[in-house]
Image (tube, rainbow, N blue to C red):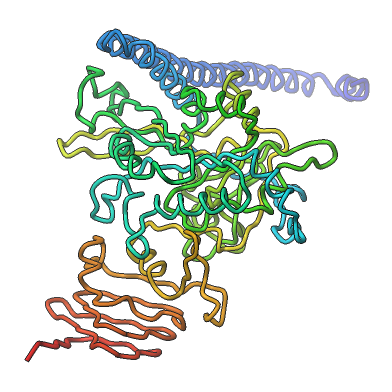
Length: 540
């Protein structure tokens, strides 16, 4: 600054005058610029603040409106049900509040690499010839829970999905009970079965359970919560009376509701008093979700003085599983990432088999006292899944749901175990059902295992067209289930019918043109063949 002054004062008078005039004009402009830019920044800040205040205000008013609607609903409950209804709707209010606060998607760049101990290989868990006493001791601490809230409507069946016949006229529930009864008899233990029903399946399931009175399994059931659907625009409940029997107005809020509903049922405390310590939770339509002694032993034994409170079974992703949830590290915690939480620009990356190599089987193991703690201390943090629905009456609504696996972040020492694909045999479609009904699988004591006659351990990819969507129609189209032992890939499209003793090998594609029909004759062997056009076989 001194050098600058020295230069200025060595100018001649005219130069000084020009300089000062120029400096003053620049100073004035600068002041105006600084004032305008300051004003602009101030206005931007005010606008942003105003926008945030507006959002906050509308959310606050929406929550207040919901609370009033819920109070009105509680008042419509019969006196003997009021307390239970209030407890249930209080849980819904908490879920709704989280929905208003939460972001619908994650910040993709915040995903961190999984820690080394986050996923454990199943091969590391192998028990070498465990004694019968050890197995009995482990099993005596276990409760098996099956998610039984789903209907079979997507496969054209009425009633609970667990009542669909899978093999030899045995239903999902039959096979599950056979598995547990055999285990109880073999190891002289009493592992109970617990069914989490929904209001859609509860009544039918209770009637069905009467026929299992002589089965050597203690069967318990409880009903998960019943939450009101909310209008997409106003975010207010569509239902006005608790006693309204219209099921369109209510919904079961996903299997993430298990922890609170299990606690509220009283069964959690009962099992703790009985000396039970762990539960194994899975979908009733997953025929691979049997009690696994290797996983149970892992969760029972202490590692460095600690037991994992929660274990999620994951398995390697294939191109058929690209929408399945995966485990990630997010904000320094293990988290289940579902496709609904992925920003649109990153959906393809999420589906990538190379980047996200594993997915959640929904076979979950948890410590019972840890479930009690996270529920009582309100430590459960599960991302809210927004499920839009369009009702037959022409109304757009949303359901707020949670996934059971999302609770992984709430438990201490939680981890994933990368299990064989054989632990994941869900039946979501008739294509899945065809595999389990075929000679690909052998059945013993309710357990389905891949046939030893199959040369390789992978299962075929089967895609049956829309003519096969409903179970009754699917069964009509097969005079006998084909031999699939050497099948790699089967695609069937259009009006296709199969005779008895058909053998399918390699890649088989059968396409009946629109308006045409294809009959596959009895005893046909198709190996690496494409069948198309029209082929009718009529009785003479």
